Image (cartoon, rainbow, N blue to C red; front, side, top):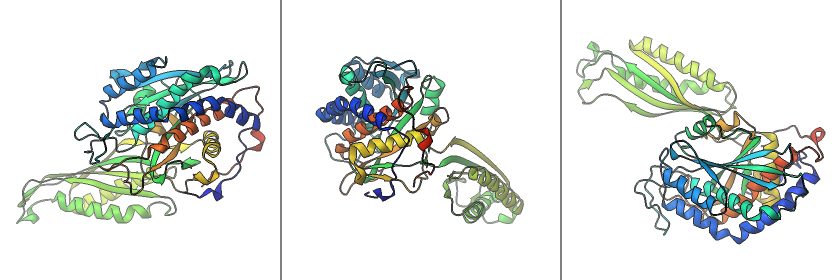
Amino acid sequence: MNQSSNLAVNTLLTDQVRQVAGTACEPIDAWLEAHRQELVGVRRHLHMHPEPSGRERETTSYLVKRLDEVGVTATVLRDGLGLVADAVIGDPGPDAARVALRADIDALKIQDAKSVEYRSRCDGVMHACGHDVHSSIVMGIARAVAGQADRTSLEPGCGMYLRYLFQPAEEICLGARWLVEQGVLEGVDAILGLHVDPENPAGQFGVRYGPLTAVCHEVAISVRGQGGHAARPHQSRDPLAAAISLASTLYSQLPRGVDSRQPSVFSIGRISGGTLSNVIPDEVEMLGSLRTVAIGDDTVLQQRIRDIAAGVASLTATEIEVSFRASLEAVRNDMGVTTAIEEAALAVAGKDAVRRIEQPSMGGEDFSVYQQEVPGSMFRLGSGTEGGHLLHTPEFDIDEMALVPGARVMVRAALLWGLSQQNGLPESGSDRHDEAGG
């Protein structure tokens, strides 16, 4: 992951902001280093007791308890799913910023195949996407800030606010919407998020200016014809034949509908219809996904899917209905917030451990919902183990040495961005760099 040659010197932050943020971080960093095993313990508890999306009530209760131990009062959100809590660093003035730190808390319906002592104890459910890691990092920050709140050495009138968001239901793309509907971003000026990266080792960081993930749309297609006997297809209007033709045409023609230099992908994940080998069914259902990065490409390709479906319907004498649902916007990282993350990572890990991500992921992430409301940025945290496994697999695990560096970078980035917004600290707006990295 040592691809630091493409790192430019950022000038969005002044030396004074860097110095003040560094001073504020010293006792927090010291606490995190001294309590490394505490973060590991939180992560392992969550890993052993995973809950799937929309059912994270015990997880929520556990997190509330751990915050209460250090005097942090949490507000449990609707239906007992997720929580929000606030904290103060220093002595904030009237113009002080509030930065939210987001952690997702849900697990996946995957059977844990590991043999470690902290493997999932819930049959058929495991943390295979690192949400236990994200939660333990934000919890570690919350406990560190609570334990060192009176030792940050900031001048009177200098400080900021933090808001901790523990979000349910990320895997089903609903949790962020639920939280926004409940007003968790009221008074928030920016938001930070992170995601584990098992393809890079612990202590490595990836940042990206601009799009980090794809726009994602679920595509539902219904093909209706007239069933009949498999021996006499001429007496039917075969929806299966139409569905096969449609799938083949979409796969071959959609990539030619937009600029080939911009990533896009259409995939069909399910085709269902019929019950017997000798019966042509009346209807076939198809379910897939459309993913794009460039702004507007999804609109172009949605129309192209409709047009191709109409052509196949005419050719096969069937009726084809296309609908798009469960859409997610791309995570598009804000320049200023990303600069704070990059500088924090450089300060904590050094230039050889920080890279700019060259290509966006074609996956989806509902962190983008928050970015529709406030500036935000998500970074990648190296967490891979030697010979380790990828996300969403039964053997997935992480190198727990990633926990403390992840927490240190996240809290430092929050301080860098938050303090840079405070009046009275030198501005550097005339010295901005204009190019989005990598």
